[in-house]
Length: 322
Image (tube, rainbow, N blue to C red):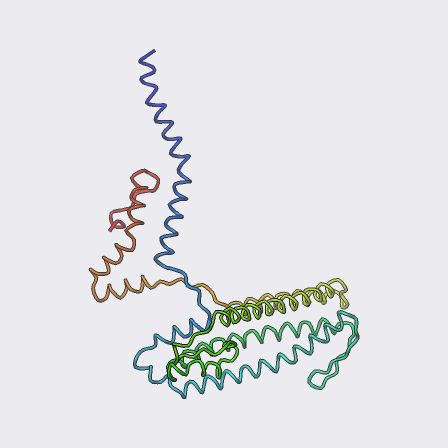
């Protein structure tokens, strides 16, 4: 009996250890994945940058030989082109607004007539669908124009810092980037003069208020278009074509929103400066590159080696350990 117990206990202990191992296996691997993800975030951090900021940073890395070409003449060219694109966008926006007014009157059964480019538009079956599709197409076109304006304004912002003295940057931004400088003038050449706490809080309040108003207007416009689309879908004045137009308008609206989101609002970028640093070091000093890589991945290698020793990760080949 004792002999049987002595021979059975090691088997039970081994079985218990295996059960514990496989029970802990997914949790250990998941914890390692989360730790590695956190370490990668530290090595390659994410940066929130607006389209204007990313353009300015990119232009700042132009070769020194080409830097003299970024002068006042280039700034004037970009400003003129930006103003031309904004003028085209404004003309299309006026037409778009006229169509929106007509559609709004149609939705509320007001019965208004609208004249666009000398053409009188009256409410009749099929007209709201056609105008809504035209409106959505114009909105998509305006979004593309605004994306170009965003890129040009990023380049203009960068050239303002290069062409003009630092003490004039606020004035030049107010002159050339009017939409981005809706704020109180801050004196750069008099650092001893600071805003009082009241003015600072008031400025922040006005900025937040304008953001809330902009979001409110956007929500109202989206709500009106959604209600109009739903009404046309229900009425279907021209049958199945009404539903096809509604689907087209919805697709255009989604892409317009996404395009504005990508070209106007800040987005995240992954900063791989560490890899760039290692690539440069490999060309200039390979030993230093090895030191940088070892220091950057030391914690990951130690953590993975410990899990390999405990059997939770398959052991790497000797080549991968170097």
